[in-house]
Image (spheres, one colour):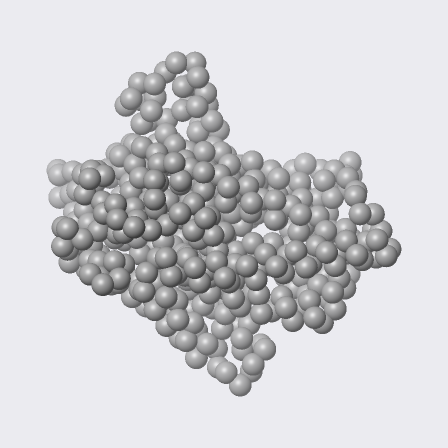
Length: 451
């Protein structure tokens, strides 16, 4: 890699927020609605509020660590520098599951939806075309990728606004509960709190995206100030959208027993609230959301691989390479594209199992890295520091670790196998831990500050 060549700072706060929300894909509130409504017995908004609180704890820790280490490695770098280089590598290894497989999930969903609407186009053709499009977008530059994702995100926001407006109109005209303002979706004495908590781990994954923006640290203007703000705002905006949408969905269609299939409950709700127009709009928005999310996740994954390649954790000639023209990690983007082609033979459940394992484990260790780095290494132990750098991150680590331990056996087995592969690679890299793995020599002066 050319040492004088680096990632280019070109992203503002607005760009970063749009990137994170694109990864998050707010429209997913409809895809999980049918499953969540059954578990919460109608109190989905409350479940989303709890999930928001949980994710804000981890967002807090990401915000603290990105201020200390505004570099593209994200969780990999934070745990490496905050706790231990070897543990940092393993955390980076498992979080790759999230970034590398998310484009594959988007590609598969795209293929399924397009084929359902246009049966004459085979699913493999849809998947391959999809992957080519997102790969080209990411190669041409992060600013272009963010701008395209922003346009596609706008369709999602527009759809949610139209759905809420039609729901309000329907409620005023006596549809659904007939009550525009109701406490029932938030509190029902007949619903046990344990029922709500059971669905929180699933809903937490709706917030994935706030963490991904930290991979853009070396392409963001004033990252120490911009990224913490973006992390909190992405989480809060996502939470508001999820709570508002689920509230109106529950109000306009309270009879959950009439769903033909919980997994397609959104279709019943949308047809009732807005007829064929809203349902057709949902199909087109779901397709564009897949593109936006894949662009964001593929861009994030390529930068984590770049951080590992730059440090010679992975072969530098491939993973640490940047295109002189586009200033993007081209080889990494292409590698992710080939991984996304697994959509031709893998299923959603397998990919989701990998992602759930990697994300929760990474969240747990990022929270712990705040404690070790600030309280342990920097010895910030005043009363205020104990609250900021010990109590809050410990609470976040405990909750995410609990969610990780409660993953199903399928997720645990597949995720552990991937972790074992990473551990074996680390053992070989460090000569059975007789050597330390390479560490990031963090020097902001080496990062291109040009816009």
